[in-house]
Amino acid sequence: MFKYETHLHTAEASGCASSTGAQMAEQYKAAGYTGIIVTDHFFNGNTAVPQSLDWQERVELYCRGYENALVRGREIGLDVFFGMEYGDGCSDFLVYGVDKEWLKKNDHIIEIGTESFLKYARSQGFIVIQAHPFRERDYIFSTLHAPRLTDGVEIVNHGQNDECNRRAEIYAQWYGLPVTEGSDAHNSGAAAKGGGILSPVRFSSALDYGRAVVNGSIRLCSRSEKSDN
Ligand SMILES: [Zn+2]
Ligand SMILES: [Zn+2]
Image 1 (cartoon, helix red, strand yellow):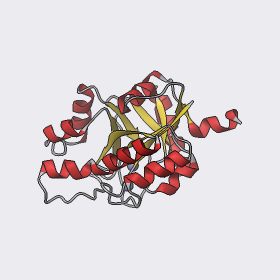
Image 2 (image 1 turned 120 degrees about the horizontal axis):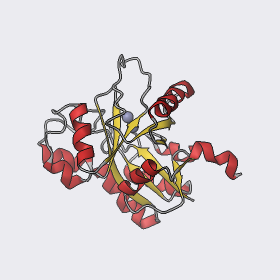
Image 3 (image 1 turned 90 degrees about the vertical axis):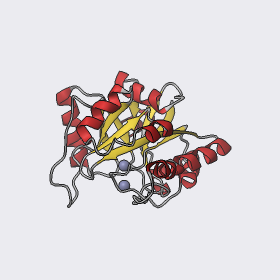
Image 4 (image 1 turned 45 degrees about the vertical axis):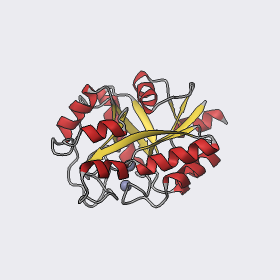
């Protein structure tokens, strides 16, 4: 089985992350992963990218953590793919299939709001996974749940407690939505904890991963370790 981290932040682009893309790549390689998908907070989340810059410059900086991970990954033999975490601070959605050129051309995607963005992203062929849909924080008073506008649900997120993850799993079951797992790693120490997914085939893109979630061909690392040993 090929092991992937599906939800990961870098210090270059996420204001809350403390390890660079290169450091992340090194630690995930050392922990035995085949690949990682870099999903930094977009400009409507906890971004490290200054808002004062123009859109093209902001997109360049946004992609830097991914690009640094990609360069290091090529040197050490780790596959590195691009994704994004689009969110308003309360509700967050992981998008797979998006790339830098698309972001540069779509400078309206924050102002259209979350629901319109989800519809638009899926119309582009991207796969949208709701991240930690029942996350609890002292600044969260309501969360958007959009079962008809998402392709799957992150039911195991290593940044959440068991109760929040259990609610997410029940939610996915209610709506018959595909499920996945991610560490939501903000520093390279997360690699050793072993979150993410296993796939019987090697992915060649983030979209490959998204499609594997939808067709149910992945296994969740946290549910697989016992049976593998
Ligand atoms: Zn964060
Ligand atoms: Zn995240």
